[in-house]
Length: 235
Image 1 (cartoon, rainbow, N blue to C red):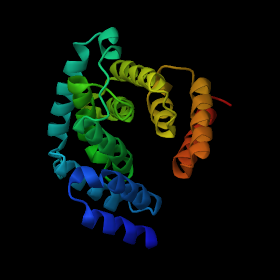
Image 2 (cartoon, rainbow, N blue to C red):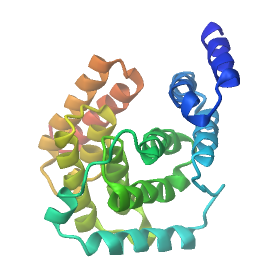
Image 3 (cartoon, rainbow, N blue to C red):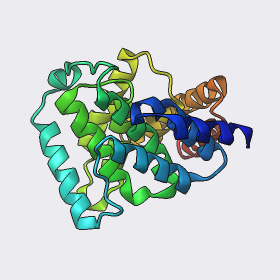
Image 4 (cartoon, one colour):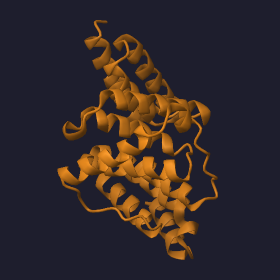
């Protein structure tokens, strides 16, 4: 309650959206830890709207398939070297904050609005291609790859694995240790083409990282996925 009161005071006193971004981010993480995913999603939506992002309340399957197709067409015109050679986005760029909130929004949406994952991840990929990549791009690329593996209307395992590998290269480039990335890539993308035991080992690494950084819930999901993958792999 004290933390929430402090947050609301700062939000009330803030003069601009830029003044409030860090506090909004803390609010989203608090809502997530309190199992209030829908409220966390609403806060992300509000912040991104103030940052001039137009996020629909919902999208039908046909719209999402068209969006994925459009994003995939752009990605397919770029070689691996062109993707890996994309410029880095400066942290002072307003779009850096946009990607920061999209990055946490895809985590929230995974649990509260999974039907919006194609839109959110496509938007991260589109912004990153047009304006540069940053550490907040990585989750978007990983989850976009996971969407390509599961979307019946636009299933593309080879393309997903290619994008997933690019995402993991970006993670290394930004020295990023994020348990969400291990869960998303090795649990839902790499498992289609790489040895399951190797994937299980990396998902276990995601569990360890989650525990180290205090992200207990994501560590827990990595632990469950590790057991599932290891069993399927014959361990």
